[in-house]
Every structure is written in structure tokens, then in C-alpha cells.
Length: 64
Image 1 (cartoon, one colour):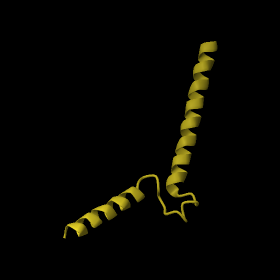
Image 2 (cartoon, one colour; image 1 turned 180 degrees about the horizontal axis):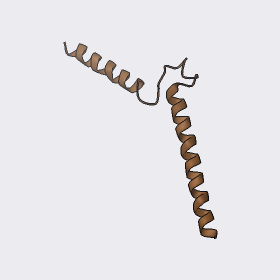
Image 3 (cartoon, helix red, strand yellow; image 1 turned 45 degrees about the vertical axis):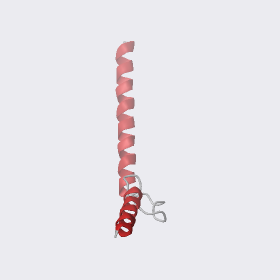
Image 4 (cartoon, helix red, strand yellow; image 1 turned 135 degrees about the vertical axis):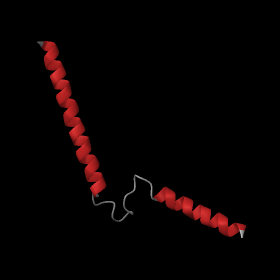
């Protein structure tokens, strides 16, 4: 039945859109930080520290 195939396709499309990389957990639980979000936060902090140290080192070398 063509209607059944179309319904299954539309349903699977909705599931794929719902479970993309940005939504780790469904709405009631997404208020609690997930391990994935904590990893991204730590990664961002380390990259920011690395970039600031790199910039400070570059500026101190050019002043001398």
C-alpha cells in the first residue's frame, strides 16, 4: 500500500530530524547537562586558554 509507505517515510523523517546531533536528550531531560555538553564546554575552555596563551606569547615577543 502506497499510503503506508509514505506514512513510514514521513515518520522516519521526523525521527531523524528529532535525533540530530544537537538534541542529546528529550525535552524534560535536556535541562540537565549531559556528558556531551560537559565535554564541549571543557573543550571550549581549553581552546580559549590555549588561544589566549598563544596571543600573549606572541605580543610579548614583539614588544621586546
